[in-house]
Length: 242
Image (cartoon, rainbow, N blue to C red; front, side, top):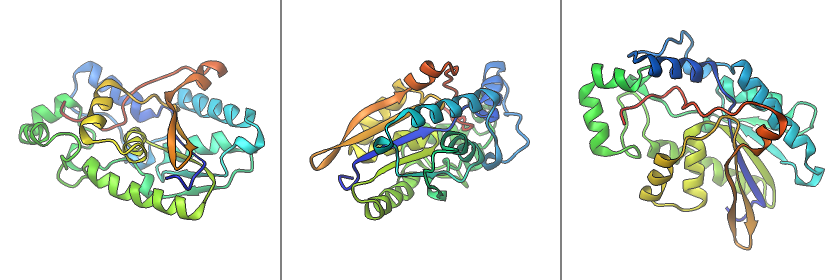
């Protein structure tokens, strides 16, 4: 990744799906009540405020420190976050399906309680294989997501040598970008995952240091607090057995 001078990734702002998932988990329900497909779930009003706060952070940066390009997940909540953040800044925005959220297959819209109640064999298989390699029927494992993310980062290195790139994507993509850039092991990644919920509209970034990208910030919400946007840490609409 040393060809880039700076790489950042922002998780999308709070979505209406995050709100519905939290309500369903809190109430002990088996299914999250969302009529839309995952790709079409929009931001909540709080999420829009968070995205605007990211935009104010970007606008306050010196022109030479701003990203040269923003690459965004195809999902509505990420595209809306990027639109609100870069409007009026003149930063080119590209949409790339390789940044989409992990596909959950048969687990889609089930809470953790719902998976255990309706698909106990899958809950057991997930526990045996672990989060990184478990692939739900019709869905993706984290390892599958790494493959598409690795290809995207390879292209960015080639297309933007010495450049500054900002990604706007999803919770799992933030963690897996860190896995790739910092060359973590599965065990190191899982330790971070167990200890951390990636905040909505948080910023994680790396800066070039010689022949490598060194960590600059992880899961930072300082820009949200400074701009008066309420921080939230709901998980993506992806309830899995734990």
